[in-house]
Image (cartoon, rainbow, N blue to C red; front, side, top):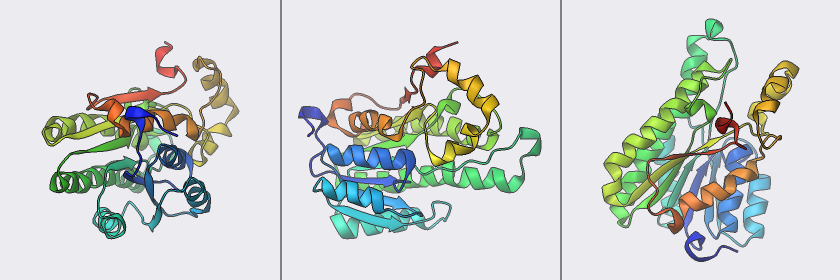
Length: 254
């Protein structure tokens, strides 16, 4: 049960990538705080649906490939048909391609940027237009990464996309704050998801990263929920254009 300024009771939240991983953890956290959930994704949504509906919230699943240009308009249209309004957008859908920079192909580069950057911008734009039409503003949360702040290894298309997510979040704040739109980002640390499975299978990389986390563990998707509820709620009404790290202290350690 949410309290006071953290209460999202009756709010309508679109969460892309909500069928698993970070998106799922955030969607369930928003539902716990009172929000109805529009789950956007390509994989099975059974777990997300069950978690949201058990909390007594309304739920809509939209199957969409975020790399497709028509997806933002389709997602907004179906959400409005079901709920009549939008209050929160979380852009959590993302992909990566693991290769050394010297070996990255043009196809891999473009695939990652299409989902992690281009789709994020046009979802923000489309929902911001709806917020302006509705009046009263709204909340947008983008998902960055530690690579929004530092380079990474074997993920240069991902690094490029997540660094850009941080910067476009700042830019959109500058233009849209006048409409009451709050747009911030969360930079997750090392999180146990399907996306990080390949990295977690590499003993050398695990041995390298483990000592760098002051909290001595990798994060879990549910660890992102608190920051998301804060940024989606009235409690963050004077926070705008900022990227919050949820990383177990990783970025604090030199």
